[in-house]
Amino acid sequence: MVDPISKKPFVTVDSDGFLAPCGFRYTYRDGVPDFRVQLGAGAKMWAQGQKTFAQWFMRYLDRGEASNSFYPAEQQRDRRVYEAITLEGRVLDVGGQLGHIRKYMAPHQQYCSIDPFVGVHLLASNRKNLFANYPLTLPLNFLGGFAEFLPIRDESFDTVNMRSCIDHFFNPEIALMEAFRVTRKRGKLIVGLKIEGHTLKSSLLDIAKGVVGTFVSRYKDHHMWHPSYAGLIALCRGCGFDLEKEYWQTSDVLYASFIRRDTHLVTVETDN
Ligand SMILES: C[S@@+](CC[C@H](N)C(=O)[O-])C[C@H]1O[C@@H](n2cnc3c(N)ncnc32)[C@H](O)[C@@H]1O
Image 1 (tube, rainbow, N blue to C red):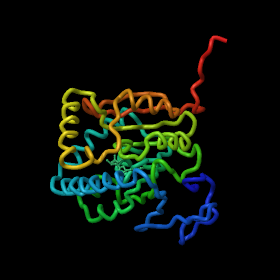
Image 2: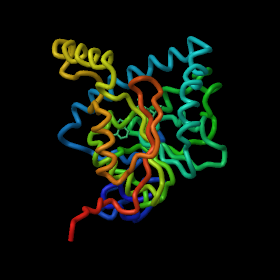
Image 3: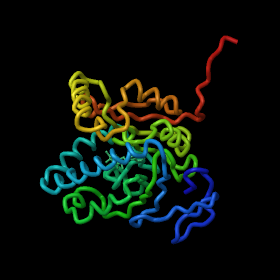
């Protein structure tokens, strides 16, 4: 691990926390190493979105306990995705929460989840169905932090996974540049998310949400960004990742894998 801002190794690491070269000390919150860099502008909107998401997540956990078929049905859908687009080698799960995707990895693979939702493990405790269906009793490498400031060494992961979270980030471009930095050359980026405007139905739903949002809240929903297909592919390409494979889980939920280029820069061809 490194200081999430300077990317230099910590001066000391002990039970008091992580001392960065600049003198700032990152500590623990709810037992989790907390690398959530404090951000100014945009933080209020993000915090509002995160609060709405946390409420949604509690309802999700309640539904999982109320019905024995809830998690198996979810896994039937998700397993197909990760059979088509495999999680390879050492995996960094950005916005990875409780590490659900370990269900689709081999037992020997190394895994780390980094997510600003530092108290999420407390919400999960005593959820019988959740623990029966997902490998949550395994020790979990979990860091509190943001995709935009990864406390991770350069080129140290084979796969970076971002499922249903790019649209939650403050700044997807910085997050993808960080993903490029921590992925090994020719390593893999996996992105899964709902694509805006891909079907007529989703376009109409998005317009309706926008109209309702004008009256009910300042925010359309708890997402910070609503990418189109072209917007997502262009962003990944611009940050050094070339599209490898696509898997449409539904008509508007896309999973895509990208290969990390050796260098970030795209060479411009000239006639000379
Ligand atoms: C819909 S959940 C997806 C969780 C998990 N990836 C999955 O597929 O089950 C979105 C996650 O993104 C996280 N998140 C929000 N902002 C983030 C940021 N700036 N950096 C990293 N994760 C973030 C949230 O805390 C939340 O856990």
